[in-house]
Image (cartoon, rainbow over the protein chains, first blue to last red):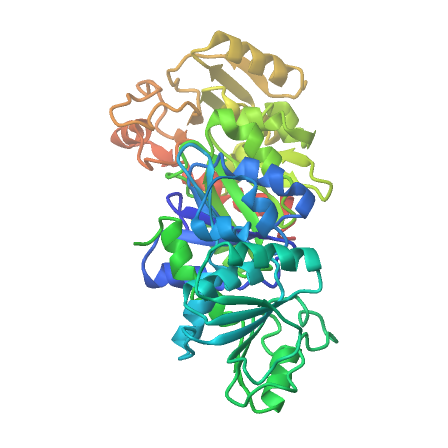
Length: 265
Length: 265
């Protein structure tokens, strides 16, 4: 990759940032498609997010930023415009810089997750889902599962306020998907079991979902990218279940994000 | 060059920025020395410099910024601390980010120019210099020529205020270098003839210095980097004089700037 004075800039903002895989994935994509852009990591503490975004929006050759933990909700407040997914979720994982220096927000976690499932041969239409965790990524995934035609979603979150908010938002869409309150335990009726909590990122974390009751044909997915093998996925493997690691989400959303940033068709 | 989540960031700020050669030079240096850093170009309009610097200083993994035209003087006002060269010049071409989010300013144009001359076998000690242009780079070069032991500097600038300011600053140093007011015409006594004006950057610019009276052994230097062959250097070549293009300045200052940014020893 050759950076020169005409290179367009994309940054990923997070705290911490050392674990981010976006630089490798985006820069490989830019190289494959001969896009004159580079993605760089920026370590931005939460209290500084506003100041950093106010600086970055004045940089003419900045295409936009990718937003990761813990900034997805806070960054949405800086967007002058939000995509449907971002509005549904209340969070953004991408801000495009417009020519007038304003931000347009997009959220690709949900669509990226569903694309990743489909790319691995796991269908969503007509399936019963257990989704544990209703933060930024979990909310985005829930909406994308509705869009993809899941027959039911059993939702669980340790925070009843967050859970109720997402339930209400999903029910207000008046889709055919049945939205139910679940528990953090798989049942034999679940085709797809998803962890959208951060439980599993730190060494020694327990599995966030009890898989004892899971059906043998169930697919067990984790949104966590690092470590790739989480306690949940290890437990699923030990039970002979099919596992779906978090990296597919990012791998299947980079092209859509590059298009949103107007760097690719 | 592989960018990952642990890569440190350096940016060059200018308007325009497309012509900048710093990305190629710094990134090649980082690669040669296995430094985990990348330099990216940022196009920053003058009115936005303050907002951009206030944003960038909150980014934990930003080592600092390189500052180019037209920001060298304005950026100095944002530095909590200035190096001797920066204080003498009144401008900075480098801001290092300190851990507390403040900037320390450095100015490497002058020392880079002198290093470039020496690297090409052109000595400065005891030499007579004609220096045309007393902006940021010209002022830095004048101080560095004094430091390097030039016997005399004839100064010229179309702006009498700028000229008087630099004359006063150089004389106040009480060095052995004779500081005189010159004209934009070479005399046979000049060993080194330097253009530090922007004249020559645009197509059709005339030569900023009349070389008719120059001695045959004179070295004619231009600080302009693009085009590499300026009207002044073309005129010097046509008269059989030795030429010294602007790229040597940058090539001979990148290592010192990387050290200032604490990216290299």
